[in-house]
Image 1 (cartoon, helix red, strand yellow):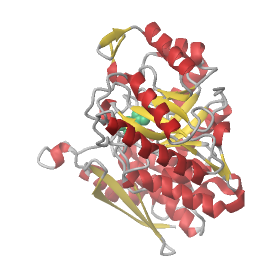
Image 2 (spheres, helix red, strand yellow):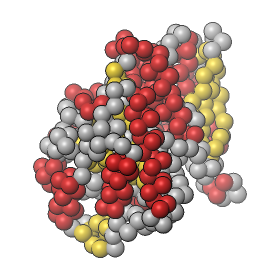
Image 3 (cartoon, helix red, strand yellow):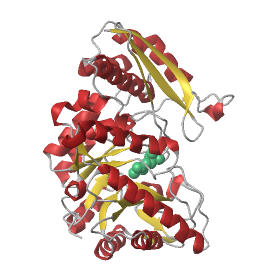
Length: 424
Ligand code: PGA
Ligand code: ZN
């Protein structure tokens, strides 16, 4: 039974305050969870409550959310069985009472929801992935390493936010981690010798001031080859365009020019024809449903099209996309929706509808590794949690190594099969 719930304000990887929650059970178990925070947030995400008190952390403090946990959310679930995750998440949602979790804050609610799951797992003496996924949880995800950072995550001129390496040809997760990391280091050398800055962006990728988005893909391919791998066969590439960030009044501004949606769709079709691209996320803006339909009709059979800002891990937005035949993959961010149960609902709706799912970190992260366990629990087959650098990113990749070791011979690496539409 849940005996007490505590919360505090801690810092995330950008030096901004965030919520950490601790749950104490009557058997003496204590577990904690910390909440991540995005920069290129979708307009339809659950509400992140910040104090707005300019005298502390430029208004970004989370003392109100902390107080909501201590004074309201915690007391509402005291005495409830910790393994009753769905009942607990329902109580949290009802206690908040708003559609977008804006009264107590989705950051407060998520911290409680995740800490409860971890405490229940510990109390059952199970690792989190097995507690959540049961005996069927055994698929290790392909890591999508975001090795070039642009957009809102870096102070460079690259429009596209993320450039991924996807080591789909590895035999094991551990091998895929080594491959991606080796290419990451070769990429640094390539950028350096071409005269580019090799400082890091928010997600641990390099943040060079490249002249075009295409140049980013060229660098990835060169680095893959130079590290001794075959592009496409062993290591594929991918993009998170985060197009909402450069979309206004029906126009996309890319590389200093104004592009119509049709031009942009043709541009992506050309990229897919010329590079071994397995996945493109948020290729278009979060409210450009017509554009998304055109894009999906044009290239959706050849490449994974992921909805992040488009779906915001919300089963209702995802259902809308499914009904319209828009995109074919769901990005999963626990703090976009705010409870573990609703996150699981979004993933199972995606799976039932033939959409793939990719677990995801946020650009503002902590040492919390819950998403690594979640990826294996639901057999998602894909996870993106930054470059193999910066401890808040590497913490998730390292946790997956432990899970793979724990599963032993039962572990299966998703590899190519995680991307059923990829033919390259
Ligand atoms: P965010 O970026 O965490 O800043 O929203 C991640 C993403 O867009 O996938
Ligand atoms: Zn995204």
